[in-house]
Length: 95
Image (cartoon, rainbow, N blue to C red; front, side):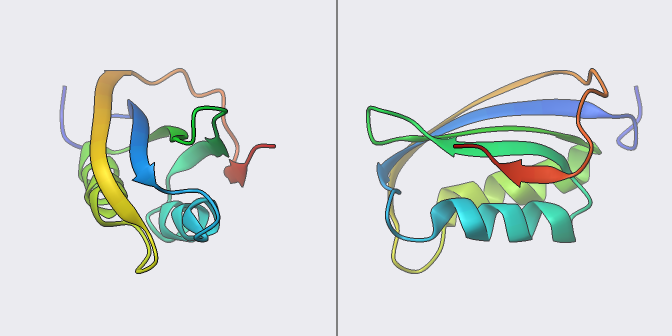
């Protein structure tokens, strides 16, 4: 598998990540990186992200998730890598 083969990233971001434009800035970042998938708030206060793209693009997205927008306070990021399914068209905020 090359770095340009499609890959999947699933991440949960914990900390002060809701109400600080985290989902919108994640969407903007993912779209700029040409990554497909979604982001949503979770009931426990975390944010969940599932994204597919090249490994370098997803690593850049993961770096963003570790930093977040300026108002966010990231405590930890849990990330899992897997095979892409190709099920996404674009990157969206889920309710």
